[in-house]
Length: 257
Image 1: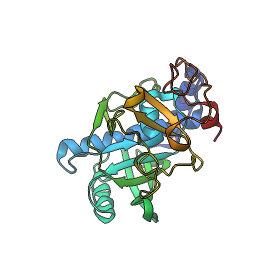
Image 2 (image 1 turned 180 degrees about the vertical axis):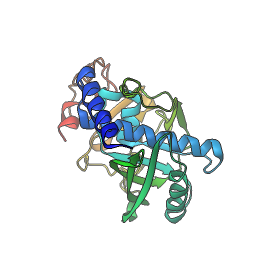
Image 3 (image 1 turned 60 degrees about the vertical axis):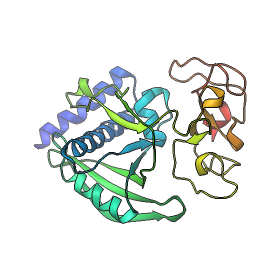
Image 4 (image 1 turned 90 degrees about the vertical axis):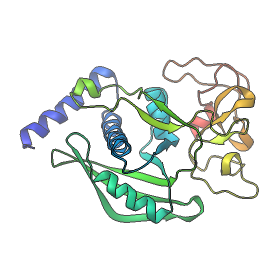
């Protein structure tokens, strides 16, 4: 890719971000996230992997775009042991997507309690560096996965391809028991929803599902929002009460965390 072409792409990114009212770096991450989704879907089609699913903040952004809290991590679930997952991810990334290519960086951080490894992936567009993405590669244990169309905007306007579908942890995964979409927290005695320890956020709001309350909600300690007041987010209706009409919108305490 010529330097002039890369400069044009950067200018297009800035222009589209301005026109769409988006943060430029957030739009750049969306491009990277969807390129990774594209290569994962390509890998499923070619039989390199049987399936995958996204969870946590990236799944929320793909569902709700600007209404979701921004994230820098790409939380990915694949089947197999950690060693097998790393090998499979490397095979997946070798396929590339459109004119995007990917490379695993050597540094890895093992998160033993979560059975997860954090990997840095360098994304290139037409051989030129685009962005490095942190992938939290966890176990693919979900029984319910939603196949959905990404809600993210801006890629078409940039002239970049976008995969028409992505696989995200089911919004009702776990049935009547609340289950944490992030899914990388420790499990064991005294744990909260699907292993997220009761008693706080550890610095990040989690989107949980609770069929018994009829909808999605961010939670703090013991599966309930720390505040009953919901805040407007991206035009999503707000409400009051523990898990009322504002379900799906983070409460003030959750967003502040």
